[in-house]
Image (tube, rainbow, N blue to C red):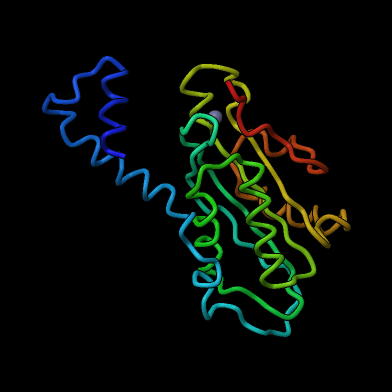
Length: 203
Ligand SMILES: [Zn+2]
């Protein structure tokens, strides 16, 4: 990978041998390996020992989880907040594991819609809950840095499964709870019937 980065620097018109860039290929490789480390993560290992059988069926919410991911169209960051809720039937996940789960899927090349769906589907698979909801709010540098479609560089996506899909009341309860502290513009205006935002334009 380091030789490819040296070639990339040369293609950009830079001198890869100048002092400031000498160690850049090594740093870029290290950074990219970390930012895509989610490919090597095993979900069951991440959740190891943190699935508990309980008699509890009220909504569990973990909100304002910071996440950082890379858009697969441009290899540029998109980042923001993730809000997760589920209604257990027999199993709960240790609360600290939910941000870890978000990291596993965020540390890959992604589009925001798929990232949102993968987090929801995994919680669904592992706990068989009565419902799962995931809402992600993110800024996409591939759009805001390049100055294109600035008004859409902020995107909100959602995945609603089970009770959150079937019951408007359950869905609204969750959305009200995450809106309480969300200072992010746009969230209030989104209709949650379908994925709400385009992750990024592709060109
Ligand atoms: Zn992009």
